[in-house]
Image (cartoon, rainbow, N blue to C red):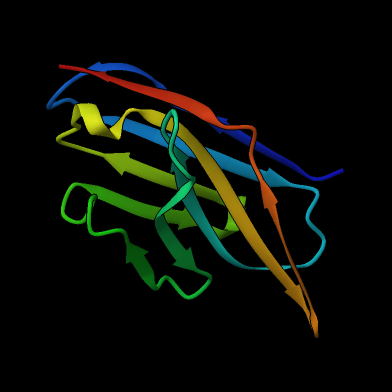
Length: 119
């Protein structure tokens, strides 16, 4: 059974920091990329950051220089270090894992963790 267990969300003041974690288990295929998305109330889910198995990263312009994504391949865990948080970072953050096996490709989603930044 595939599980993506997220942790680290919470309430923080503007300018503060949080670290999100997402541990994947039960995925039998090769993980090609892991990432974080977020969805604020009334808005569409948006890509925040991704990291490939080789360590290449990609960030949304809105978080560049403030957020850092990293992963521990041995633990199938992805992290999101969030610094200089702003009120507009308030959202539910979702972990995403993309897998591949030959021509077969797919993805899994975590259950989401709430991040609230108070101004």
